[in-house]
Amino acid sequence: MARQVTMTIDFSFLADPAFRARLPLILLLAVLFVFSGLMLAKASLNIADLFDIPRYEFNIAKLYSISFILFLVLFAIAISLSIVYGHGLGLGAALLPLPLLAITSLIFYLVYSEMLWPLLILAASIEAAAVAGSRQEKITFSSAWGASGKALVVLLLLAFVYVAASVNANKEHYFDSLLGSAAELAPQLKQQVGAACGEIILGAMEQQFTEETVSEQLKSTVPRETVRSNLVALCPMIDNLNSTQQDILVDASYNQSTKMALDIISSVKQTIRTTLAPNETTEAAPEELNETAAAQQVAELKTKIFEFPAAKTLYDYFPLLVALLVLSAAYLAKYVIQFIAAIVCVLVVRI
Image 1 (cartoon, one colour):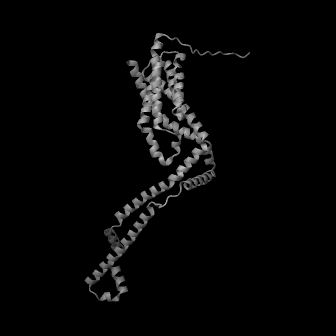
Image 2 (cartoon, one colour; image 1 turned 30 degrees about the vertical axis):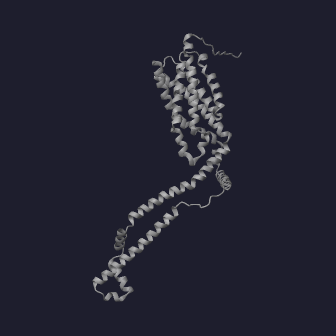
Image 3 (cartoon, helix red, strand yellow; image 1 turned 180 degrees about the vertical axis):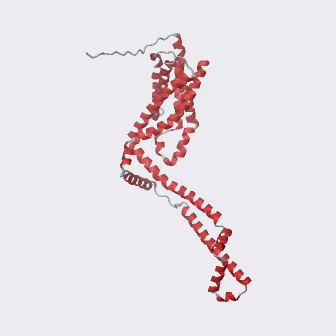
């Protein structure tokens, strides 16, 4: 006969004076939750930013903008107050903030429709902090660090699922956007690399091929006697001149050769500058034509890429790879939030 195991989870709680004294914390949590959501919305972090390679410099700047920094601080404080609220309470009482935060998220959705799921993820993380706090015997920096860490693990897991699902729902669009951005960036990158290499070459030529160095190189390569012999072979009458006159002709020959060499070097330098100069189009193509050409370029690039089996596998796992990329970046922010939350917990308990 199979053995039956019954598990009971008690969600009931006693509304004693100690619990009622903590009810204002729930309202304060809701206020912090709203302001942290506003800062996150103002930071304007979008999944599409990951695939806009030419604008990476501007998109990365969002991560250290005032709005995003304020979001991290406000969210960390919300996590800490949730831990303080849940400390010493049963599971039922610790779960009370979740309905209020969920309703707040739905109200927030009426203004920022794209923020619903991110806010629900934040709400779940704050609630996880309250549950983790309810299991702590005493709030210290170490226990607050552990409780906030558990709450943020919930945040990271839910964020991973959200990003993967969002990218998977628009996988082809995001993949095409990534290829288009890469194709758009390639000529710019090629030009920048070429310009940098050209500047290095031109700088080396400026240092190595001065009039003095070229003249010395010619004199060391072609001895004076060889130049004198060549001049005599070209014009036998030179052999009748005295040594001083012959030396003047040899020096003139060296000077003329140096001038010709410098002219050639100058021509080479000008050719390099002309080659590396950006192409300026006097007449812009119509926008529709540009979009059509870009779409064709992406289609051709995708066809070439998919000729490799590894590229097809990369496309199949594209949502998971993007989610892992976001997760690795969010993991760094986790320690910032965790540190602030632990400090605030200790300060609140001591007040």
